[in-house]
Length: 309
Ligand code: GLN
Image 1 (cartoon, rainbow, N blue to C red):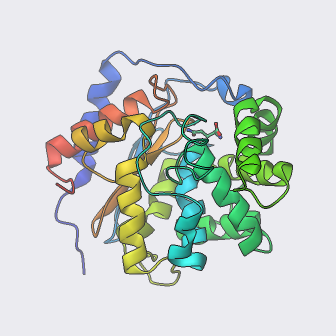
Image 2 (cartoon, protein in one colour):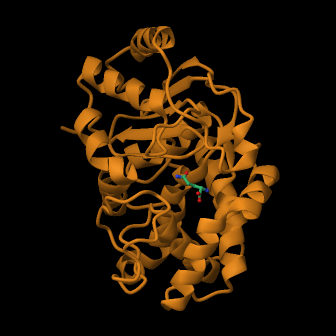
Image 3 (cartoon, helix red, strand yellow):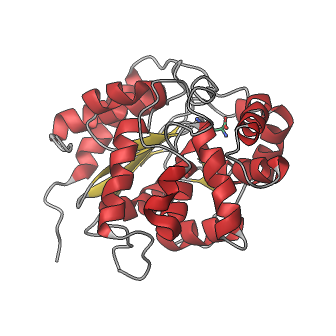
């Protein structure tokens, strides 16, 4: 049965063309040197619908660095195994702080406000070391299964580059350890976190992977399931409230979808029971979110009226 009512192709292409004519703003994430050299005018989009239809435009084929978008997948892997027990180690409140903030940790006894800050994702990485024999392999296999693409890989150069320069994350993991919320060796935890952030993915692979959050935790052919319906609802709620750090309210207001960004310039957003949409454009605004990605999604939900509100 074909559930898709809207032909998204002309809508996506129209907004894409319109934004290409407008001035682009922002800077690439040069604090990870390996990301700095990218052609920063690239701009791609892919929408994957639960009906199986796919709509793409622009530079949807080149791969980019998943970065913080992976935090949703890491959280899902931990939540699938631990259930509500997970919330003893990390909260579900929006932080209102930048992604790499150390600010609230001391006051909160080392419990990160939510799993999408770096602190939160580093705690989740620590938890995954205890839950999975080989968490890297488990992550890769999960992404490959949901994207339907066995070629997806970590980018060792990006991970190395971040390991050499990731001083704030080194501070975070040590601070968390001193506050009792890291159980494993700090280097082992940070290596896992950096490796996971380094996954290379393109817009279509990303949209297909995140279709699981539009499809109650499973692939549309029902061959793979990560989360049950209730767990999926909760992860979507955390994406809505915490997916864009101190810009989460703005994203909910302007776009109205659960979503997650990464400093590779990717943004993925989900309309439950309908679609997931991935947008990639490397130039970031001052909050670390893709400038054009945000503009595209704002226009898309405005033109289509397709948002959760
Ligand atoms: N790996 C990046 C970091 O830890 C992820 C940040 C992001 O994408 N917002 O700084």
